[in-house]
Image 1 (cartoon, rainbow, N blue to C red):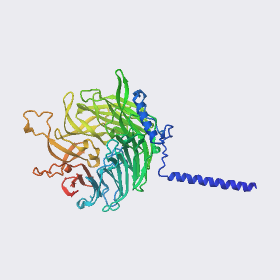
Image 2: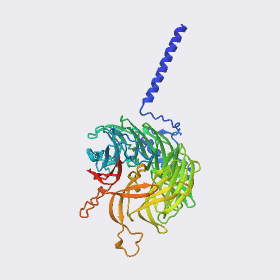
Image 3: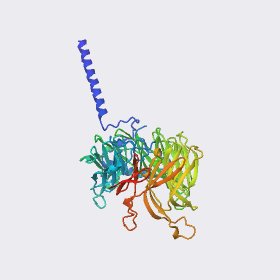
Image 4: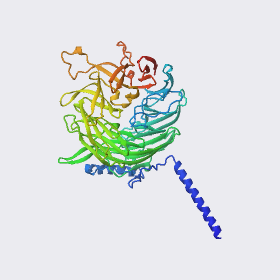
Length: 624
């Protein structure tokens, strides 16, 4: 009897063991599993039972926020505890292995752009279509297919067999106050491009809201979308967004929305979506937040930053105090988990104002303003830990000026501030708790984009300027090469000025228009050239004199440490015929440049030109 009993116990033990193994396997295979090893869930994580509860929370939170002082703002509650220059792309086997890629901020984290290449084909977003061109070899370049779009597309991603188109389209809904049938939604189209001549749409994802930004990491596209709920207030009901995946609709419900107890004056729904472009798996998390204006992403996290204002007590009563709220979201193989939020004084310039390095988050901000006669601006650098708590800070840099560009590279931060002249700061971040200025350099003008040349040199692209005391007149475009070998005494070892007042470049505000390859000594940016007609002035030309339009095109430079910037020539898509009314039309402006082996490809909305890299001789023109 005892033997039979032992056998029964053994059998049941085996059964339970097998069930446990099976359950573990099922959990591991669940594509929506969000158990990321980033910490423990916070007790304040919650979701709503219904729309009325959600509306009451928002209204009560707004009233509570009005009474909140800056001294109370240690940052929103944590939900869970706890650089390179090229995008990695797969290539067609018959394509080139030597080609340029999208200029990105973080190695391995691709960013959407209007042009992509895989070394054999170009994928060009122009107007209301995406054009696929066979680009290599250059002499055989031709259009192989076109994808017509019925919405506004803003960027592309390309993998070895997929083309992803990101954009916005319109939904039919109704605003409360005038019943207009209008609402914007974010859209993602995924095409199988195994056959470039016949791309096949395999996934269509749309979600209501405003597209903020996106990234591609491996096979996963991560998309940030904001949804402004105040458009849909109607007594006791708030209209929540809808997401559609290949015709299957998913209505977001109050119990699908995550939130925490910290008050805010205004709320939006922030959706983070992940799409596996290979197997079409979709994951979406929705958070009740104070939205986000700028997105930065590392390999492991998405950060959403929002300009914000909180009250600060003063002798004259309450004053508004500008700050930046940052939401940290963990991502891994398509899974999404909210980590924590932090808050720092001041506002940021763009995505390059933020960085993640060895578990720390670094951010550069400006407090105050020097516009309209004010002179109270200061600039700061903050370091936050994994829980988004500030552990180090450097405040009060360049009083009376504001940040024009920032770049975090390893243990250093480079900042450019400006009012009349350009202070270039070298900041040491080796000790996260004690950031400090190592050196600075003051030169005329300013840089709006900083790009690493090597570990001891940085390229700056910006404007020259003429100091006028309280302000400065911007002049032509300026590029500088900074030597930071001696971090205590940075030097401008080379520079070049291009054009006069009015000269402009898309690279001044969009880093994807900047092409640099140190191995080829190659630097290309699109420039709209303006030059002053000296015959119209007697005597000295005034600093405010605006140059007349001369041309627009890609300016091709050779850049070396020894010789600095050398202009090799220009490539224009304009016909330069003064009798042709279309000579100066904007869609002939070169917007991007890239190379495949020894050929330069320049792209506008009307054509792709292919020129020899050494001589700049024209090889072929392909109309779009």
